[in-house]
Amino acid sequence: MNEYIIKYSETRDLPVDAVVALYRANAWSSADKPELLHRALVASHSLFTAWDGETLVGLGNAISDGCLVVYYPHLLVLPKYQGQGIGTRLMQMLLTRYQGFHQHMLVADGRAIDFYRKCGFERAGNTEAMWIYAGKDH
Image (tube, rainbow, N blue to C red; front, side):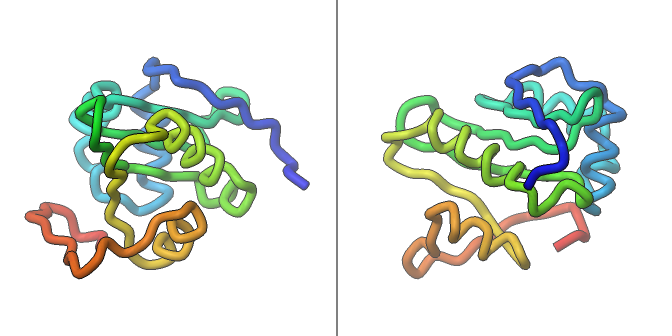
């Protein structure tokens, strides 16, 4: 049973320090660029957040053309809140928002692969993820 009372929101009124704390807790290098990270999240096509009182405990965002294609770049939950269904709920909210779109895309590694498989994602044929990446966390 969930010991937390989590409230979900589409607010874009996110304190930068709360965002940075969430990203640092998950060892994501984008926390090293707090202002850019915050601007990117606020500019997302969709942004869902999860709150325990005043504490930002999770978020998921999407970048989309609004018609056919959606990309899910970020889905994070504070480590002490993981395993409570928060990430699954955030992903369900995003998938519902983009239901019927032709293509849903994301890049997953490590433990996230099994999580996204449970959410209905599968490897995209013979594709190979490629990037030019400034971080060191993958």
